[in-house]
Image 1 (cartoon, rainbow, N blue to C red):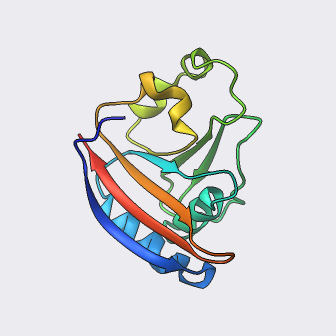
Image 2 (cartoon, helix red, strand yellow; image 1 turned 90 degrees about the vertical axis):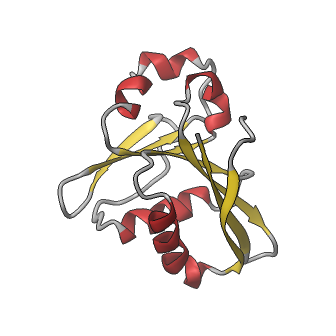
Length: 148
């Protein structure tokens, strides 16, 4: 991963009740960046954060992890697409090419990526990384960084 980014935002000891405010802050920080990498260990809360981000953007669809389908599409209240990827179960990075990852990235739509380290070679040069680290049973540290 390119380390030229700088940490742009940080929230410490985030509870589930605080996720809507954090999601709104992330949306403001990541404005204009279409590819977001959600980084964190298994169970850190990546999908839960995606649900909150989508809710803040007016998505009324049910938001679930696309673990087996690799990608889910959600529509905002304005009819804009959000693509949610989960590359955890992907066996070969080339599977991302087979589903047309470049077309998704070039679509102009927000792309939220879980387990993006599995497709590192195919990421665009500019992206927004959201890192989630458990700090307790019910709290998380969430930070964000722009990479260009």
